[in-house]
Image (cartoon, rainbow, N blue to C red):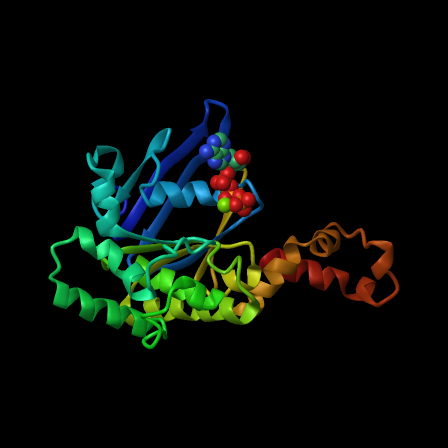
Length: 274
Ligand SMILES: Nc1ncnc2c1ncn2[C@@H]1O[C@H](COP(=O)(O)OP(=O)(O)OP(=O)(O)O)[C@@H](O)[C@H]1O
Ligand SMILES: [Mg+2]
């Protein structure tokens, strides 16, 4: 075992599709129980591939994942492992249209030994947790987009997973509903100690977590805690075209003459050190 504290460790995790596309390239990542983290990066950088491997939806080409003390490559029945350990939330909620919100949340429990009365209690508890206690009888078409996504979150929690994985969970939602989804994740993390990993394109969404991992070309190029949101802003500035221009000392024409020249060396020092 590489890291005794970790819920999940990846060791040189690599995924090559069709023998040619290297979607993940030697990724080493540790997540502790109770982590709340975001994975960001350009389209095609390997975010969904990483999420799928961590959630045992797919197998790696090489390298290992250790999940709660088990090497996934040695797990015989990945379906069983996944249904006990991982909850998924995707950009499209994938609710079954002919079933009510209650029944959608209940489905993953059907494969367990939970008695029906216990199931009903748990489904109601989960619907309450996502603020939909009074919507159990609604079909997905009778719910708003944000509500549907919250049902999907409740469903992902049905079997009390150790890890909640969300791939662009706010991608189809407006700002307010997206913020509500992230607030539910934060509450789950802070109040129930749930380990949550969210893939997102949005820096605003990423900043609501505690740690941001940046992927590029299948590699982790940055792994930073969000200690201080203002420092985070400065780091983001550093990575913009303007930030890079400031660091190189070559100011673009558009920002010449507004006073940046006189503070350039101080700005460079700050951006180099954040
Ligand atoms: N099933 C597949 N077969 C072949 N290539 C794939 C497959 N899935 C993903 N890829 C390739 O692997 C690379 C990483 O894809 P991935 O879906 O992980 O990216 P991503 O970071 O999630 O992108 P996006 O932000 O667009 O969702 C891409 O080059 C993609 O084309
Ligand atoms: Mg993706």
